[in-house]
Image (tube, rainbow, N blue to C red):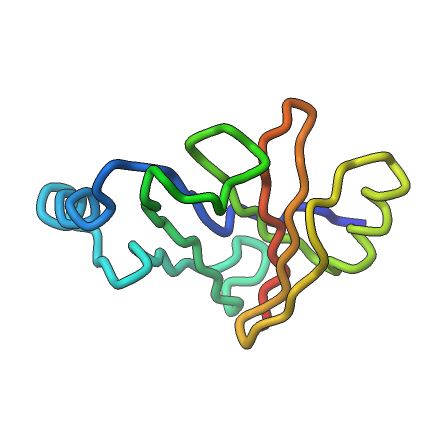
Length: 125
C-alpha cells in the first residue's frame, strides 16, 4: 500500500500570525488567504490530477499541536486513510484522535517516534 503521497501542509507557531502572513505576502509574494497560503500543483505521475499544499502560521499559544511540544506540525497527504490507520495501530503507532471527514477530505493525527504530532490527510478529489 502506498502510504504518504506528498506534503499537504506546513503549520507553525509564531507570535503574530497576521503579521507573519503579511510579511510573507509582501516580501516573498505568497498569495495569502485567511488560512495562510495555498499552493496548487499537479501530480507528477498524473499531470491531470491537481493537488494542494497549505502553509499556515498559528498563534504561539495554540493547543492544536498538542500533545507535541514542538512549534510545528506537518500534514502528509495519504491514500486510503482508514486502512493506513489500521496498519499504524497494528504497528503500535500512537493514534491521537479519530478520523474526521470534511468536504475536502479525511484527517487524523498521529505521533512519530519523538512525539511530534503529524496530521494525515486523505484529500477528496
